[in-house]
Image 1 (tube, each protein chain N blue to C red):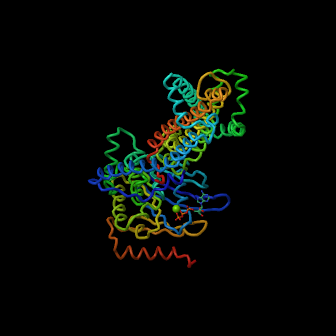
Image 2 (image 1 turned 90 degrees about the horizontal axis):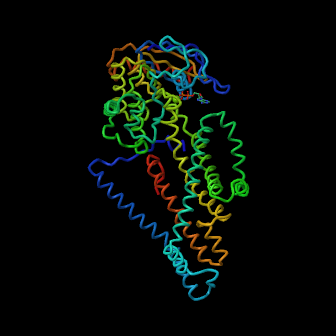
Length: 285
Length: 242
Ligand SMILES: Nc1ncnc2c1ncn2[C@@H]1O[C@H](COP(=O)(O)OP(=O)(O)OP(=O)(O)O)[C@@H](O)[C@H]1O
Ligand SMILES: [Mg+2]
């Protein structure tokens, strides 16, 4: 990362009058390439779904094991119509978001502390590293024992899952800030607080955002675990419910909904990332 | 501000990079540091700036000995070191205080002088190497430092831009009477700009020779006297001789 920030590559500057035209053209180009990626990316899934549908209709696969895609879509639509869908989606998203916020805030506090103070690093980091090697799901029984199977234990679990990737990335982001840039700040007489605000934070932002995104991914994983353990509502609950009712379409509907919401939340973070890191000198694909 | 180095040495894990450097610089003097690659020029500059307090010996700035960073000191590094998340204008105003309008006006003046007017909104990744270095030069000059340390500031530039910026440096010097220490590999640059050229040699680097240049400014780049000084300096840099 340090390298990438420090290097100033030879750039190319558009002359002013053609700038607007250039921008429009590049937006159009972007749109074209977006359409193209979406198209290319959907060829195989669409083909597979069609084959799947045909196989189901022809009775090759038993529908009580693997329902046809159209059955799953019908299931989702019927849940949306009777209103139960929104409750499940909302409660699951809510748990992830609350857990995500708590985990991220805890990671920011502890991570900056450990990143900035050598003493704090010596005190906390070995312990946190040791905890990290415990698969976070192993905590589940303990949390349930301590906190019951209510909201608190679910949110705590998610927060624990989110905490580690965010924490690790913040620490490595702060420790990885280019010494040369810090020296620039020092030459201008910045004190520690100003150095943090004006150099260390912006320089470690990319790493922080990477941590947030992988933390969010883990948050979604943990909400499934938490809801499988015991819940009366939520997408994870739908999974168990579908299993108990031997209704594979409910399970598959729930999986698809997980995929959709997970992707949307990740996409939001990606937007934030693109916005705040537009200065980065990244390879443009 | 005056500047004095007394027996300054710097050792990195057992190997000495520079040894026993003594130097007295009068306020407003321009000193050139010349020497082969790796003889410790950047190391000396970092010691003077206060960024590296691990040297032995004494460095006195304006009569006080300290290892602190002085905020009246400006440093142009060997690389541009722009902050990649700030655009050109914000990079130049980085070290300034005061109202935003004020800062920007001053910055724009200097951007104009380094030939980057109209490029204020570009980000460092959009600059060429030489453009980035010019932004770094503007960023250091805009604070009108009393001591200005320059580490090969013009080495990434074409001959013509180089000459322009050397004259810009002289303008700033004239206006603020800054004390300047300039590391360079370009002997013509040294003879054109400096009152005195200090030649470092060897590993560990030691002061080999000091050459005083008395010619009045503005100097004629092609003058015979400068050519003569150049050959004198070249001779003492020649490694094949002892
Ligand atoms: N941080 C460091 N740690 C260890 N050795 C160092 C460090 N900085 C510099 N050196 C050593 O000190 C010596 C002088 O380095 P310095 O950067 O001052 O050279 P220089 O005269 O500026 O060379 P150049 O003209 O190539 O920039 C070199 O041998 C280098 O290896
Ligand atoms: Mg150097």
